[in-house]
Image (cartoon, rainbow, N blue to C red):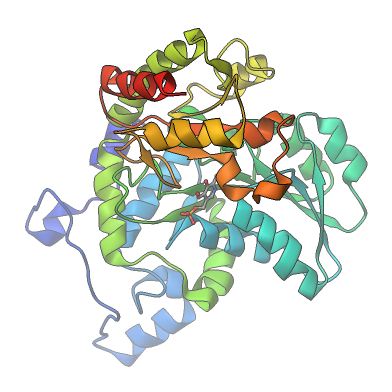
Length: 386
Ligand SMILES: Cc1ncc(COP(=O)(O)O)c(C=O)c1O
């Protein structure tokens, strides 16, 4: 479906709300019925209409339709944040005794679920270097029911060969879930590649303004319905109508923001690559990236996240550089209007910092909507101080 029509028309029923251009926030917890027969039908099929906003809600539904279409999927569920979408997507497909294969270093709360919560229920996880299919083949056990992917990873940008992993999983009856947060549906389409469940945190690019959280799962109608009728309703982590409205508002400008961010990131990337105090820059669509060819094959674009290291990669120098920034904010997250920086060493206890490990030296930069000259000027003056 045409991108413009998804963003401006799909799911909008303006004639039902006074032809208002922006949809109303249907801020209601419940929906009334005129007849017992109507109530009975809603009990029998909660996905068939509106009963209670822990399930479906009209404002949320507009967003669901658009997000499913953007992924080329049959249906979508929108959660209160990305971590909840991951949790429901995984929980829906494992039982005691099952085995999961996860790509190494997934998003931290996915890893905590694999390491802390699921083992309590007899579900084990093997982490693999997912750059080749062979790693998944050798990790598979008869009990493997689920493969968890994140491509690109939001720090290392490591990719998995998605079509190959999806075909392998299907051949063995294994369900796949991919965290597509980095690329967004505009730059990577996992569902047509054979991935079963596509997840993204809408907190980042979909919301786009750092003022709300959200998470998305898309897949077949049947799979999404099964998750809705169990984990979604039971955990109760669906997005609120107001947050759905903010996400809808963000979605309208997603292509324009990504276009701008892509351009600015290229300029910032070139500046960092040419700076004598910068040792390395990591960005999936740069020709120096080790999996550049795969990135070009799977993704039509890359957004605003990159990592770099300084030639003097001590904690002291990294700290002085980050502390010296005057405009780029130091904060977690990404995908909003504002540029952000986060040094990996801030999450590593000083005694564990390994000065010979480039990963420990990573500084992650997110390029927002500011002018590139504004950002480059800020980076330049901070680099001058080290
Ligand atoms: C790659 C990735 N996946 C998932 C999430 C979780 O999203 P949320 O913060 O909306 O729960 C994040 C959040 O930072 C993320 O970076």
